[in-house]
Amino acid sequence: MQMAKVFALMTGLTVLLVGFGSYFGGSNGAVLFLIIAGAMNFGMYWYSDRAVLRMYRAKILGPQDAPDLYKMVERLSERANVPVPTLALAPSEQPNAFATGRNPANAVVCVTAGIVKMLPPRELEGVVAHELAHIKHRHMLVGTVAATIAGAIAMLASIARWGMLLGGYGGRDNRGENPLVMILMLIVAPIAAVIVQMAISRQNEFQADATAARITGDPGGLASALRHIEAYAKQIPMAVNPAAAQLAIVNPLSGPRRPPLSGLFSTHPPTEERVARLSQLQI
Image (tube, rainbow, N blue to C red; front, side, top):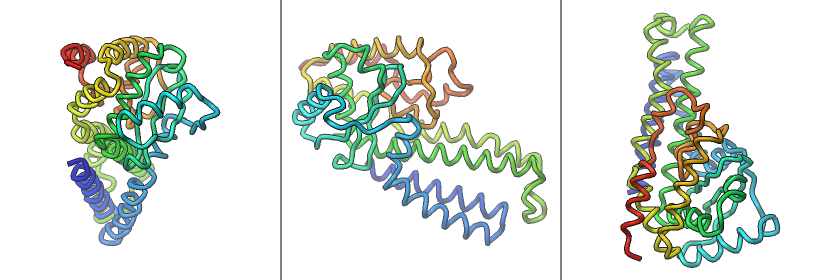
């Protein structure tokens, strides 16, 4: 099911890029953008995790950089029956975490500097287990590819906008100078958010929460962590590309400087509902 979603996302991106190239450059433009789409699909599958880590300005950690955290990840990975993932650290003071990578053997769990400082071990275990659950259920490839596609579509909208403002593309029948087309292109970036919403099911979060509770044997630890992370997110902003916001365990764009239209990225279920479901689990 997860691979079917990835295939659908990549197909959609290919169709969009070819249509974009055909509109502004005719058959030559369509061929050019078909080649670009092929390269992007290849890159997204193999390297999208690196792109997401760059969005969060995260750096890979070695065992010597965070020995206690590494031991925690190793212990929980064994319980979850998944390979020990690569560990990364994002410099943000907002407590948060996410998982990325194309499969369990090439997965990355990224935590922020804030979450390591602010959460007690019991709650941090719940968060790490949640990310390992995403890896176990192979949720992270869909999320990573969707985040990369959202960024690519937003980039296309920016290219189209600047090209039209600077005099059009000289495409067939000068359609590139049509102000109506310009308005449509300006709508493309919000559409990227809708694509992310469609690709990332809220049920994935509920499933990861339940699996994390079983991994740790402590639903209350994760529930407490979710409440604290959401409270901190409302006070401490995070500078991150909105396209990658949906990967985090709690929406990182909930702070006082929330970007315009970021509500379109509300792929996470309400924290209250997640906590309620955790409290009902029988472990």
